[in-house]
Length: 572
Image 1 (cartoon, helix red, strand yellow):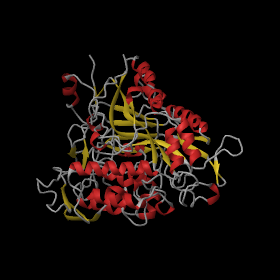
Image 2 (cartoon, rainbow, N blue to C red):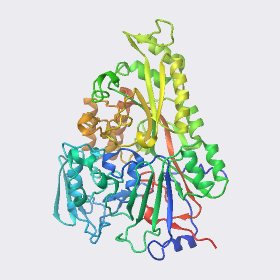
Image 3 (cartoon, rainbow, N blue to C red):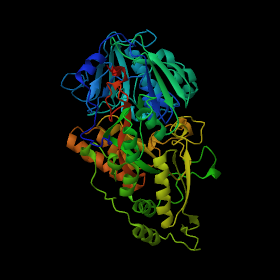
Image 4 (tube, one colour):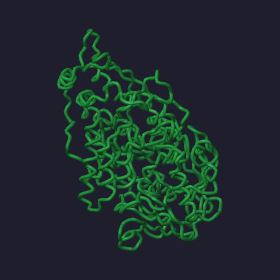
């Protein structure tokens, strides 16, 4: 078998025989025993409000659910509500200042207590607490209040007309927490609530039995789940750790696991695994971008742990000539070829999808080492002592370049280090175990949020097809700091008053074409201003066992969004 690389449209999903589909939706809850999932980036917490890591958000999505979410086609779909509110159905006010959600009656938490509007309001108060640090705070941008006229009604009021009111409580990054469980976990106490953060009570198809951080999570079917006969599986073994190669083999070669996430592997490696015949790769392009983040603050250890990556400016990355030369020296087509093949595309943009918001301003497809050298030379960065490292005003171009531990990322690091050293940088490479790097532990010095390095490389994406909340990650007030327990989405600490003003305009613009143009302008400001260096627009690539039915890869929400619909395909 060859790697399936036809990434057509938004997603590519597996085709199932009609007989198998029929079997998958019949019978008692828990009839199909255990399903095993492997995420080689091990979850470190189950509360997505305390981690910006995809691994944690997606593990949490097995238990915690939003009011509405995006399906595999990118369509906004009601989840815990009767319908998605719009102006047309009366759920969004004519003046665009309120959105009213109607919770579906009868939904229970896994502990058997009723799910009500009070839980929704509490979640808002939890994330926006002034003494707390919420990793998903941009979802609540512009919200002035959340009211609960009755136990099934939630009214979100915005400070001004908001044409896209689907930030709060929508998608896997903005689920609902149970008020009773998290009542004593507000503000600065949030990270201290270990039991609640590791074993949240939810409305999803499964509940946590045991959580071992950075290792294994055991789930069992939620007996109070709202759909009869679902989930088909009685339990989930969710293994974390290892590497992408081992995860892929565990599904497609040995059959030890049923689902492997984020197979960041070279195309020929995937093809060899598929040839074993036990599983299949699935892929689809969403907004996932591999990028290098540029630290706009100073990570010098001499500043102390609470000043590093807080005090401005960065010694040399504040110079446009420096970060533009770094970008110019990169051979992106080679990175795509080495790392992803047809599951990757060269990207010059922070927001590469949907196509309507993919800017055409930049052309970064051609490497120019000599041009990068000339740019630095003209800006006064010269190798005055002949050691190969440029300097200016006593500042040398010496950098720490960090990322998570992963075969493809280490290949990228090696290539990029060579290119950057050719133009006059001294580059130290560092890689951190992905479970730690993408964890939310405020006490760890190694998280991507703390950013104790000059540049760092990783991939990120967003839920849905509208990038408004995602673009809010670059506003000045979203920078992680000790005051927010190092939570926050503005990882580069990039800050522009002009950007913030234009972002505010996006929030009140209704016309789709105008919104797209503003989104492109915001994207361009971050790239031009030195917030990040885009590398590769990545397709999501995972794998499932041939015996696992119901899988629908979702690139617009949590990848495992419909796990309650999974089932075991019976073979004769």
